[in-house]
Length: 482
Image (cartoon, rainbow, N blue to C red; front, side):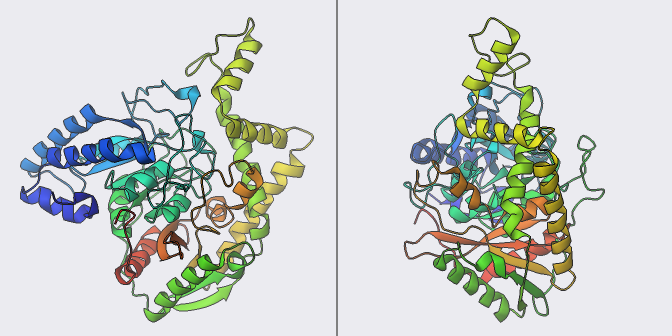
């Protein structure tokens, strides 16, 4: 049987358009792989077999009528914090284990209009809070490169599904690196778009000023295809940019481009194998004509603290709606309203979610607001200014995506401080609202993938994708499943 899971979106589209492959056959192929392989990885929470086959039949109708697009009939997966009408959306939490949304998120509506096929909802850290996809109520996700290791988080299910060939591409969400870090750990490409480029309508909120829906796929070209379909204006989201992203972006040669490398990302705490791989990636940019120069981002030393204060404060507000009254899990214990809420939240939320709610409530207390949340907001402004200064003389920045390659399951989950510090390479892009993309630049001695991040000005998503496509054309990437 042909290995369709290794094919790009454009290659699959060509087969579908010429009629040598049907959308139904392609969907059945991926559903069979999920049924056979996903017990090893736990990438999916819900597999939508009947809905996927019905969507495939509709896609075949579109193709026969000459109304197909690049995504018509392409099997995709969606992170389980993005609302899907009639299909449960759990956020990997007991609190929403049986929740079935009455509407589609805007990104889902747009993909359906393109004729894409939704295979299922992918596993994740509970309410997107975690860096390893191990806090899920439904069990943790395993890395297809080595099932004893984490896939990264919180979009670990989407990253693992792409890496294991259980979908062609997937949607994820990124609040502080939750697309880029798992795409690095799982050896795929992932992009967090500019804040406001993709509608958050229907995304179950973690931290509203940081959350952004993005794409994970085997290549930057596939990421661009999916992103172009979902990065459209939406009146339901007041934080949207006034104009849609220009995708595909203008093809600019790397020759003459200036790439900045902030020294702070390559210092103590970043594994030597990661540094070496990123340096190799930078050498490739140099060979393609780019000028690489060292720069500085002094605010990085405050970034993780600022991120966790801001994100936890917003999470404590967003998660206040889960009280056991309106929807979601309800405790059977408690004789009063206060007891009902206390017991519902105690039983319905996991440890990491409770930790962040407590931190957020503390940061927002009247006696501590300015000392913590206020100062974190000022650091955010400082980082935005520092990035703006760098982009006056750099076209893009390159950093490691994570300080290490994928680590062993259980190595950090019991040490939240260590887990939080691992986000140092990714959180600044969210705090500043910048587009950022992970691509693979090397492999460790153990054969694990290493990612590097490309960061650009707001709206420069197309530039990052073009640079990543140029790099991926010369970098020999491996598959997780040889």
